[in-house]
Image 1 (cartoon, rainbow, N blue to C red):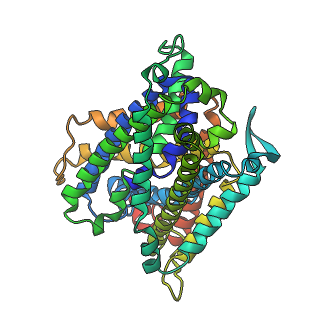
Image 2: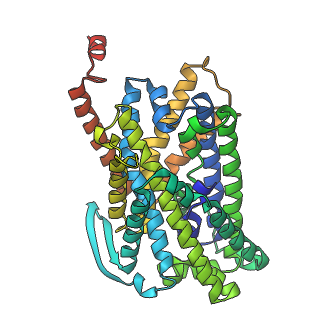
Image 3: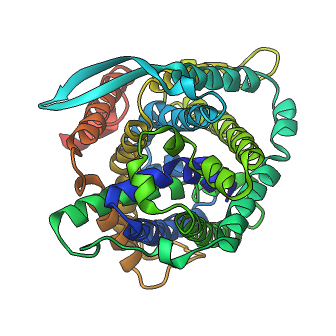
Length: 460
C-alpha cells in the first residue's frame, strides 16, 4: 500500500480534475481501479504460479520461453527500466519540489524554457526554475543516502509507513468533517455527454490514475522473501488495490467537497495547484496546518524517491548477474556490497528527467511501461494459459479470460484516447527499437538466441 500511495495522490488531483473539466473526473479513479484490479489478477496468478523473485523479468522468460524469445523479452524489460525507473524517481522529486513552493513561492518562477520539436507540431519542453534545482537536489540526496550499507538504509525506512498513513488519514478526516456535497457534485453542463472530448478527457484522467495505482505488483519482485507466496502474493495484491482504491476515491471526493473544482481548473499552473493539499489544510485550519501538511508530504515524496531508487537499482544488477544484461551493472561496492553502477546510472538519468514537467514525466512513464511491460506480460499470460493448461496454478482468477482482456483494453484506451498521445508513443517506440538493436548486436556477439547454434540449426 505504501508503494502504491507514495506522493502520487498529493500531486495529481489538479491534473485529473482538469483532464475532464469537472468532478466527473472521479470516473478516472474508478475505471483506473477496475484496470488495476484486472491487471492485478494477472499478477496474482503469475505470482502464485511462479513465486520466485524477479516479477516481470522472471515471468516474461517463462511465458515466452527461457533461452529463446523469453530472453529477448526479459532483456527489453530491463532495458526499459533504465528509462522508466528514473521517470518514476523524477516524478517524486518534481512533486517534492512543487510542494516546496508553499514555503518559497519564488521557486516556481521560470527563468528558462526550451521547446524541442519532436514529432510534427508536438514539442517537448525543458523547464528551468528554482524548483527544478530543488528536484535535482532531492535526487542527489537520495543517491547519496542510498550509497551505503543496506543495514543503515533499513533504519531510515522503518517508520516510513507511519508518516504516509498518518498524512493520508489526516487529509481524509479533514475533508470528511468539512464535506459539502453541493460543492463536490456540482457537475458542469454536458459532463456525461459521450462526446469525443469526453473520451479524450477520460483517457487522460485514466492515465494519471494508472500512475497513481501502480505499485500493487511490487510484492512479486520479492517472491523469494515472502512466506507462503502462493497465498500471500494474491491476497497482498487484491487487498492492496481494494483499500488504496477506497482511500483515493474518498480522499479526492473529500477535497473537491471543500475546494470547488472550478477553482482547481482555474488554478492549474498557479502556485496553489502545485501544493493543493497544503492549500486545502490551510483553508480548513490555518497556516500552521498548511505548513505541517507540506512538510509531511515533502517527507513522503522524498521517502518514496529513496525507496524507488533503492529497489529499482537492484533489478538491472540481478539481470547482469543472470547474464542477460550488461556486466557493468553487476559491479558492487567493495566495502558496502551494493550495486553502485546500477544505483548511479538510475540516479543520473532520473536527475536529467527532473528538467521536464510533471505531466510529461507521468505520461512518458505510463506509456513506456504499458507498451513494453504490461501489454507484453498480459498477452504472454493469455498465450501461456492457453498452451499450458496442465501448469500448476495455486491461484486461479475468476471469470477468466475477462480480467486480462479488460486490462488489455484499458491499457490500449489509455495509450490512444488522449490529445497529443503521439509523443509518448514515439518515446516508447524509440526505446523499444533501440533495445531490440542493442539486444540483437549483443546476442550476435555472444552467440545467443536467435544466433545460437541450436537456433540456427532449427532454422536450417
